[in-house]
Length: 160
Image 1 (cartoon, rainbow, N blue to C red):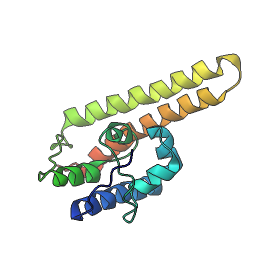
Image 2: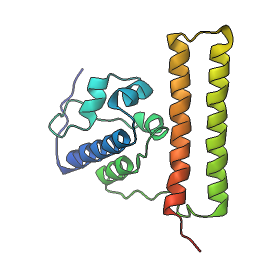
Image 3: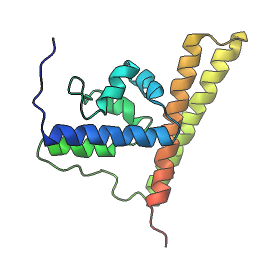
Image 4: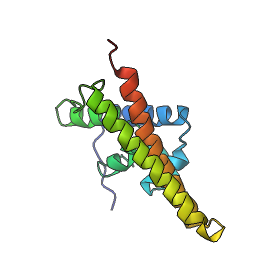
């Protein structure tokens, strides 16, 4: 059942934030179709998440952890917090600390290892079926997300 949501400035801000995240994802090579596959949604609905004039579909909080695996969702979190009258405060205020860089590196390496394992498991019989391709794609996107997070920490870090 579809329930009309009242539209207002907060909804517009949320749509704009989603649109910005999707645009940034596209600039880094992640298409709407890839986002949709990762979210287990239709590309049409995912595309509508960022369309300011379409009030039939909004991104859900349930989608954010999946989306965060492959792209930076900070603008969406900021918009969602504003919807509630709050402000988003990232938990990683010291991105440049050696511990955070080391942790991000270890998480990225683990994900790259998961890609290698998925490829090896999938190629054990000498062929790739569609399910195996999806599994490898998911692993690659997760690894890319962790590598992007590491790169972000390095870019935002202060130098001595």
